[in-house]
Length: 545
Image (cartoon, rainbow, N blue to C red; front, top):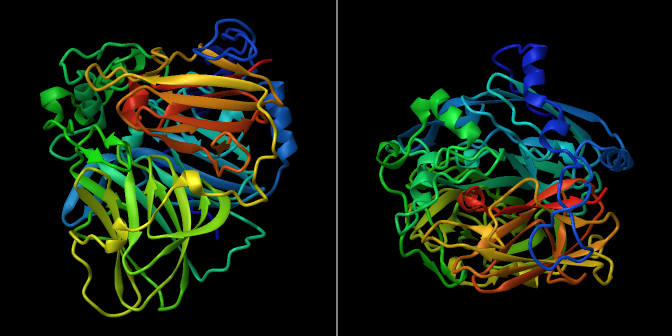
């Protein structure tokens, strides 16, 4: 399938491009970081030298991946008016003029060369969620690259080693909770699955541009905490703190983008959610009351329809691109066979429904029945749902309020999935264990690891070649979908666990995962609730130099 090239609206000069890229050493000096003991059991360490995101170790790892055919893509981040269907149009930011952004599709082994032009009023970036790519292309401002300034562009170029379902979005403030996201599908040249059609399903929760709301205003409200004494002025360094806290970049951006910004009363009605409850998530389901929940950019009253023939075997690639919402997904009248999670194959497992935390992806196979069927994505614990429609024949489309019985059936749990033998981690004892305690709460909105808000210079050290065990102890009353950049891990702390890059940690529970330290650089670990991350629940795994 040829890639879609989105034309740039302007030809940008070399000086502007240089302003966007900058020298990595200036924003992430491998020698100025903080390291420590061989097997830390607590917080980030404070001495040592680290691999630079553009260092020789990173270059060597990239060279080992090889260099396949180059797939060139141009992308523009810009203001846009987006039609969500049902008469709902919103002013937001997007990649081009569509939601989600146009899918990028490559084959494993290709080299992706994507140039992002920033036509937004704020600096931005682009993170490739789930890919084990070279560190200086990971898209984290202040850690692996400089922010892409307004009017500038950045040329991302890297080998794409693994097939699977991935996506991309900014790692700048709460921009992901606007319209800045799109699927990245990496096809397997030796695809073992047999199917007739493919349906990419992107789930989202939507607030931007509705009644004056913006994600920045939501963060500002949440940062006040339920006690009203929040920490809106906390400085998170160069990771582009959003308008709720107005870090160094944020204060300037608030002026540059004033017509799109909000906060408190001028940012629309209150969006703080109270009383969201879910047995699957262990209690509190979310912080934000979204006015809309979307499948492929459409509201439930005017859903996307996917048309196939009865008996067709369909591969659904399901992505949760939400900011604060887990989705329970079911297809009425069908059972789903899970084939992959987070891009990696698992032993085929059949169930009625799936639960996806933010950032998670599942691939499933279904055989289409004859009729019209709802694909319902229940906003877990929030008493609302997104909807799409599978149609193979005539019949009335389901109402937005439809709740297929499969939602209450067998929910496939990630922890019970078994990896395909081709991707199972070899059995091996960990060389290093890093234990992190998840801390914070709604009262002060002080989410963090080990009580320490994010600081790009604080790193948890690992050595290349190690088997690393991460133990996440959730001391909070809320669930957190944790995401590790640049690697996949085995769930459960053993080689028999499914390979993933994002996993849910339930309240007052622990999650243990193992990964092989085979991709040098500085890699973020964070909660993929975008508001928890911006409040401080982010940290860095750093390879020692």
